[in-house]
Length: 138
Length: 279
Image (cartoon, rainbow over all chains, first blue to last red; front, side, top):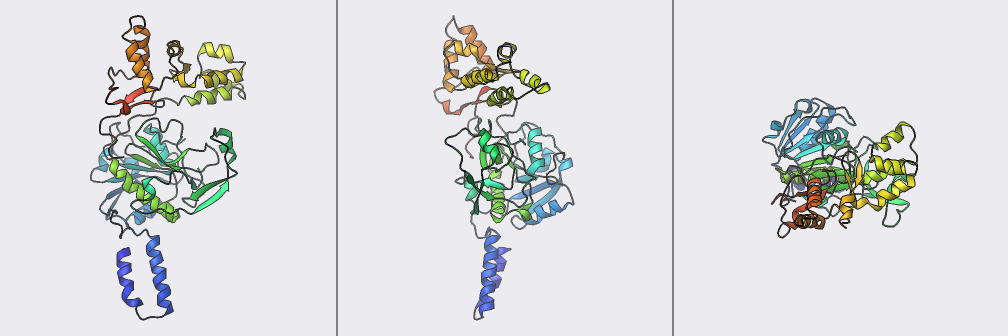
């Protein structure tokens, strides 16, 4: 990932001209923009992530493609069939649906359910309402 | 909610770890809706400092700030910039092991600072595994009584019926033609408001010379008064009103774990030992 990019650039830069220097700055900047997670000792690539959204959607691809740059294990699920047990084996579960959709699925959970969950956007706010959380949509 | 966050609360660790979040600040005109509800301190400036989290100017969800912090399982991570709700309403917040990221865009449409904050939130929330929320929203915060009272001045027809349904009959009979009086009554007694189908001012508590129903001192005083034969009945009734049936509270060693929640039912509750360790 970012580490590989950095390692690959160094030998080619030595002894080359302005174009290579510009390339170096460009790649270094890209590395920085990407978050420099690899170089961060606190970064934990080993967190296992479940993204439960609308299967096959562009939005799912966007989230999952992004998350896979930073975490080794990213799996997908379907919000429509999501159950508490789906979170087993994952450190964090993301619950999502279509952008700005207030009529999306609202899975049922028990009040004792306490796995780490991130709910996203408007559909996430509606799920929080269903679960009577303070984070519900105003 | 818009596509931006306010510049407050940047000292929270989610802005620092594991990744450094470096928002690009900008100033936007202070929304008119903020001025309508802002209660100080001071006045809001004409321009307000924000940072853009994502591209889309809409499609995001705010959580209400009213009562959000009345239980120690909840915290505000980001105040959301918005053109319709209140200043202080929440763009990103956590309750127990649940974190709501109110912004609607996927990562490709987030700013770099937005993406970093999103990744940090993933790291942050995993630490709360096993921390179920301490309260569920059961009723509105007491300040809603003020909103309904203020609404009486402009309500008509069915709207007026809704206002009426928020208040006890005796209070409605007294103030239905006096919106200012109704608002003044609830403002003056805000510390004694509780919900039981309608918004009551706790005149029983007031009769005991107690000025608030949500101070730990009040709870302790009610337990003391229960030892007084002349006031045992009223003290017991008030304890039943403001607790979930719990009969003992550790005022000596566990005082800092006792809290009062409006939205959780206008009750005193106790944080389980060890619950807050991960925060």
